[in-house]
Length: 340
Ligand code: NAP
Ligand code: 3JN
Image (cartoon, rainbow, N blue to C red; front, side, top):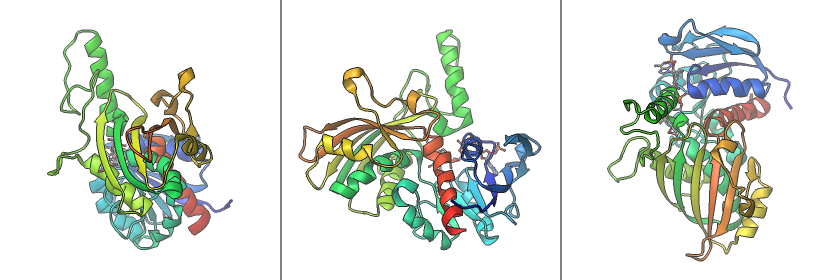
């Protein structure tokens, strides 16, 4: 374990993900010498707590990263695109939570349990990308299966919590639910339809091919992380009225013969995973159990009786923690311990 300490910046510190990054840094007792919390000009003067101290939020600027070693970004794709290169130029390694750099061939896309070997590629541009939350929890569960059996095709449907859309969406679900149960009028500002008591098969923008951007992120990012362009992946991403925790129904077709018992045994030993699979006693992964912790929960592991070599499973994780903040802090930890 390293004794090194780093100067660390959080860009987007006032947001849903940024706030969780700060909590994860505290929980991990991350070896910081100094921290700097950055957001838009709207937040200048706000104070954020860190390890018992109050720290003033500063405006994110081109020169914010001078003297910093690592910056965790979660301030949107446009902000990352503009400011990450300034950070890198000043020798500060960026761990970016947006989609801005994920598919850049020179930028590693990292889930530490799966492909930490690729972190070394940060030297290309000084940037490491954190995958989309729905991708992260899926590849944590799929990588052990991929390594042992190979994967031909994945069919995934997601049930994504509103916290994935940020602070405003958390408020919208809360306000709409309260209004509806009191027979009051309500407005939908964040989503195009009411999210309370509803399921919206629409996450991020629709594309020409009929998929949404979120669906294509899952397919493209999974292939990049597993370093295999031959895997067929089709996704349907759905927003559901849950505050924290994304759930996924995943159907995997493997290359080699597989059975549910072998997959359960494999996942029991895999890093970052907790198998919760005792249906007779009503035990299976739930968003309410995943929320607030860092493991990816996997259950309902069963043979797909419609094809040869098929497995079905249900994968749940805290989208703001393992899906974003925790994954970024884990990457930063490897950087400190092995590279800086
Ligand atoms: P959020 O709650 O709306 O927070 C947005 C944060 O970005 C706030 O701190 C905001 O500062 C800051 N910001 C916005 N525009 C800025 C600008 N021009 N300059 C500096 N700071 C700016 O959103 P969130 O849910 O935390 O998500 C933030 C980003 O993280 C998303 O856009 C996405 O790229 C990424 N994300 C990734 C995942 C994932 O799957 N890995 C999941 C969720 C989000 P103010 O408070 O001052 O406005
Ligand atoms: O909707 C979710 O559950 C996850 C959202 C992720 C997100 C939200 C806004 C912008 C992203 C992302 O991480 O892909 C982005 C983006 O950076 O494109």
